[in-house]
Structures are given as structure tokens and as C-alpha cells.
Length: 184
View 1 (cartoon, helix red, strand yellow):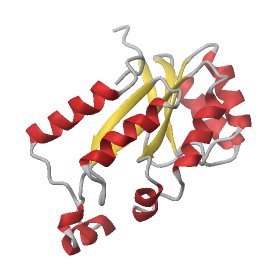
View 2 (spheres, rainbow, N blue to C red; view 1 turned 135 degrees about the vertical axis):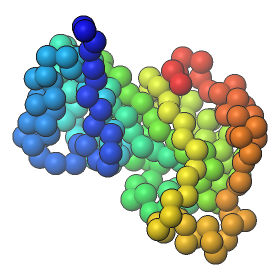
View 3 (cartoon, rainbow, N blue to C red; view 1 turned 90 degrees about the horizontal axis):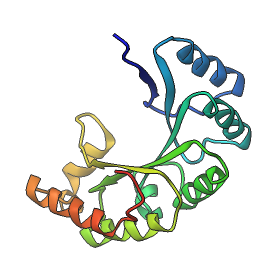
């Protein structure tokens, strides 16, 4: 009793539609009496000022968080994993959000193919030059039946295979370099 919720629009891109359709979806979720806000996952190349203005209006009454799946700061990696955007798109998206008062977040994957531990720690330096509220770190997962599984089968040496302890150590080193104002 009395519990409240944030509606999480997470899977895929939740800003890539007409603004009227987006408003319909978000407002349907916000109409539920126990929903007090939205967490919206999207790609950095799928936002507009019109959308950001709308989210700013919502943020006057609701908790609003916009999360960008950046995944890597390396254009070479982003191209290799067929991300469909470069790191400059992420920089531009976060800069577009700076004047707004809602929360912004970044998702990064540690362990993408072709990236060394030094590359992963270099991501932090790139991220520290940007303004955002929080960071979500994800481990690299290889799912059966995906293109990345085929790539892994052909060239396992391009993938760092962390033990749990090695991954924890990497995350600690990553966080030690991260701007302390960022929520993880």
C-alpha cells in the first residue's frame, strides 16, 4: 500500500516516433495513479529539441530520466557492433540536454569486442568531459543466435573473458577515475 512506481521505457528506442505517439504512450503510463515518473531509454541519435521541451514540461510534475545507450566512446567499436551512431552523437545529445532540469544517464558496456582494458578505462576520460547525472555499467553478454555470437566463435581473442574478480577490479578502477558527482 502506498508504493509508487516509475514507468521504465527501456527496451529498444523509446523516442523514435512522432511526438504525438510518444506523448500518448508516456501519458498513458503517467495516468496510472501510482506512477510518479518516467525512465526513458533511448539512443543518442533519436532525440529532438521538441521532445526535450516536452520532457521538461513533464518534469515540472513528474520524475523524468532520459538514459542514453552510448555503450562505448570508440567510434571503431560502435561501428563494429553496428550501433548506428558515433560517439559525437552522444556528445551532441548530452549537450542538447544540458539546459533542461530532468535527469540524464549514460549506459556503457565493459568488454565489447576489440576493446582492451586500457580502452575501457579511456572511456572514463571521455565521459568525464560530459555532463550527465548517472551511469549504468553493463557487462558484455554473448547471446545465442546473435551476430556477436558468430563473431565470438570466429575470433575469441577479440573478447576479454573476465573472471568475476577481474571484472570487479576493472569496475573499481573505472569508478576511481569517474567524476565523483556521477551517480552509479
